[in-house]
Structures are given as C-alpha cells and as structure tokens.
Length: 403
Image (cartoon, rainbow, N blue to C red):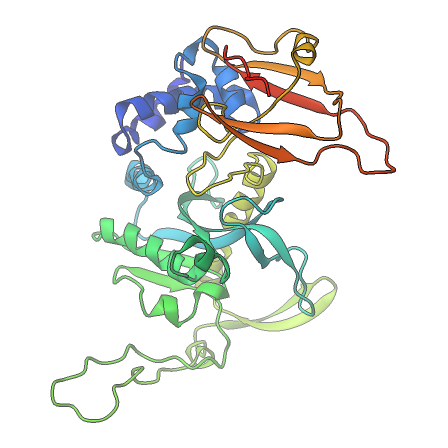
C-alpha cells in the first residue's frame, strides 16, 4: 500500500526531525491510520497490509524509544505553514482533561473537570491534564472560519505526582510559557499574538512574554497592573522592588475604546461594553475548544492507556518487555480456533473462552525469553457464580512456557 500523495508531501517536511528508519515507520503508520478507523497502532499495522515490512514491535517502538522529538516535529510543521501566514501570527494556548481509568498509568491524577463543574460546585476527575499550544489559521476556501492546529504538548502533573516521579513541579502557565518562548525564539523576525483564558493571563505569563508576542486574555476590570520591576543599580539602598510602577486598570483602558450594546442571551438582557477588535481576537480561542472536542470524539484522544513515562501511546506488544500474556492450558489453545492474524514474523491472535480448573489463574509477563511470574486473583468470590471471559492471547511463533 502506497502513501496517499497529499500525506506524503506533508510528512516529507518533518523528515528532518527524525532518523530515516523512524521516518519509514512513520510513513507506514500514516498509511494504516487512513484506513484503520481508530488510532490504535495494531490496527494501523494490519490496515497497512504488505506495506508493513518490519516486525510489528518496531512500529510500537516508534512512539516509545525512537530517536525523535515532538517539539522538533512541531517546529518543522510550523515552518511548513509559515509561508501562508501573513502579518501577525495568531496562537492559541489552553489545557484539556483526558479522562482515564486505572492507577498504574503514568502522569494520571485528580484534575478539575470543567464539564461537570459549575460556579457553585467544583468536581475533579481522574485522568491526564494536557497543556496544548498551537497556531490558529484560516483557510482560503472558508474565510472567517478559524482552525486550531496543535504544535506542542506538555503533560501537567498535579502537586502530588512530581514527588512520586522525582521531578520538579511546574504549573500550567509555566508549561505554556515554555512552549511559547520556544516558538517565538525560533522565529524572532515574526510577530505573534496568543489568545488564552484567564488561567494564562496572570503575572507568571505576562512577566515572561517574549518581545515579539502579545497576549489577549480575561482580566477583572479592577485588576491592579504594574510594569516590570526596574533593574537594580549598584549601590542602591533598601529592599529590592518586586514590581514596577502601577499602570491603568482594564476599566480605565476601555474608556473611549469600546461601545455599549444591549445583548439578549438566553432570554435575559445585558448591557455590556465591547471593544470590537479585542472581541474578534478572543473569539478565535473557540477554535481551540472545537479542536479538543474533535480529537476526543473522532480521533480517540482519551483512549490510549500508557503504563509508563516512555510507554507507547497505543497497545503494547509481547516483545517490548511490557506485554501481559495470560498463560493457558494447551487444550484451551488448541480449541481457540483459527488465528485472526497470521504470517511469518507477524502476531498470531487467538480469541477463546477460558474455563479455569482452580480459583486462581496465572498471569505471566515475558521479556526477551525471561519469565517473570506474577499472580492475579481472577476466580469468583465465595458464594458467587463464576463466568467465562473472552481472552486475547498474542504470540509470534514462540510457545508460551508451561507453568
């Protein structure tokens, strides 16, 4: 199966961000992704067909141990679209919650759930919190409609997780400023304008904005704003200044720059002061929310279950040292039926029902022929009737050792 010409031209621009073997694996993954439906690596390999000439574990390793960087790919992607961006480049910065289940996934924790929360009560949810930064573009075929293209990503760890993983705690604004400075620093000859919500409109972001970037965010009308603290001269006495001179408040800045309108929202009338240009800028931020919704509903953004900091964002394979293989009796394997996928050097998948002889079933993890036995309580509880469970057993021509 050959790569679609349009995607081939797109991927060729990011080939400099990775090695030649990794880029070849990426082209195969992209070919399978077009026809696999959901973004699962195993389905991509099967959909690629004869084009997947490598061992299937090589395509999983592309996301776990290959020599390439997401930041380098994001910079290469911006370089590709930079000729079509005229004037000030609009950027978007926001965070989203990817809901997960299970306590053994890396980086998960309790985070604020904006969909379930209200003004009177806040709810938290277990999952990943991703800080996403990208560029907002408008296609010539649809003028006036803005599309958010993600470029950089950072995983936010709550206050309890950094001590467990032995890393320094960083807030979401700090992660956002890191990505913003990386893009603005690599294109110092361009002017940028980032739009974000009120979480990224505080001092931690405003004090570290690059010289070639402006920010549009939400602030209270009575917010106290100050200039940057002046440089301390040698021989100056007294306590160093923490902030500069106070500037006008947002309410004072709006005088003479906005107009009053009467708005009817959900059956209620409101009188508001609107600055037209500021509203146009901030309205572009809605494309970020649309991108989050589409990535979760159509691309399966919340589905990958990574178990470690360097684990691939798909399903593990039996040969990368992390796949779990359920040990079964030879009679059960013989009665499993024909394989779903077969071939030399390709995974063989059997689906069968297990009827354990005892209350416990062994669960063994294999890595390079080394057996690391573990155990899991899988039998029915006393007084409860057991049931059959469908099990997927994967192997590639190697016999599972008997217990």
